[in-house]
Length: 460
Image 1 (cartoon, rainbow, N blue to C red):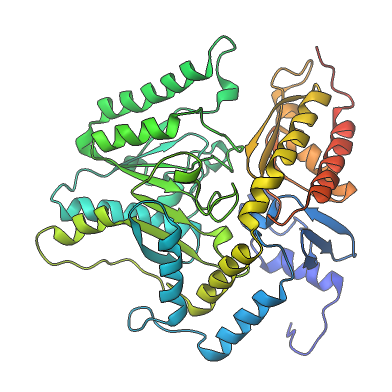
Image 2: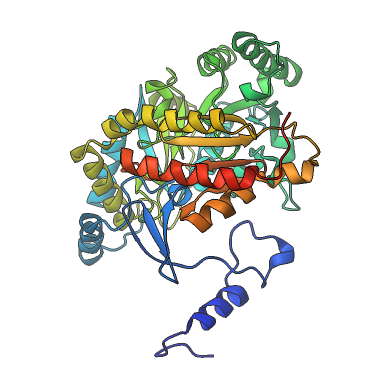
């Protein structure tokens, strides 16, 4: 069917999406059967579906809509760059937006992380970080130092190497991964520690996990440790205090690069440009970022590499080529969007706004745990949150337990709020421009949804 010149009906759009559009993480049993909500317009923190119903965007798109929807100044910046220079090959040219943005990012990163390699998104940023690590070790004459240490419940992307170091349970699919390149550390979630164990002892146990793995595998075979400051897709897991500093010290002692995956936590989500140093007190060797870099207006990611790593690569003997890059590396329109995004965040003090509203956000989150016995844990930092159902529900099967997140999302969606369900959890990361009144609106709906979901659960 030729659609040119025809105005599609709602039925056409539903059929075409089902028949031709393969969505991320689609259940194979649902190929050609699942009907996705179609969103037509957006403004601020809100989305409207095809019927005109309004929703608060609880997930912030995919953890990324920092400055909110409908920004005319962003549209103008994108349009102007499209007309001036829509594309230039990064193999042959540079552009003003790419050079300016690289400098702007370097000015905001911690320590000596001053070299920026632009990618198409978070997955390719992680892939680049891992390939750079392996490339460095080959340049240094140690090609067997290539094992990557990841963590259970960590998420790093969908490209081959990024998927390889991803440790989420639901990511165990029939897609192949480079299993020989990765080893995983056990869950770091303090909520899952034994009842009689202190946070300090839990941290000690998690540090011992890393030390034992290095001893087992051999530091001479381990290239890097990759860690999200907060394990976001795994359930907004905040490691115990001191964990990041101690893991970095161990990596330094064994010449293992520390890669901080800030695809979610970067660009304001915790009230800072980057969380590694300002929140957790570490300066990693490599930082990856994407998502909030452009507030989701256009695709863009970056792998930011320390001067020390660059020097080791460049000082190693022999000539070589950094064979990593993408057709859209440093895309001038995406870079222009990121520049405008940073300008907006600075001119409107969005980082300061996040810091100011975070206490209210946390208080409302805690209120849910205090009010509803079905809730086992609430956690988060900045404008990141997670609600986790208790694992000991009376007379409930595991299958019923893990449907909690979907049930809560369904109830909240009916009331005008979108969340992101994951097993027995629901996670959320609203646009950073959300006001205290809008935070109240969001949590009021959550509490109403929780009231509905709680019915039928017998609690001890």
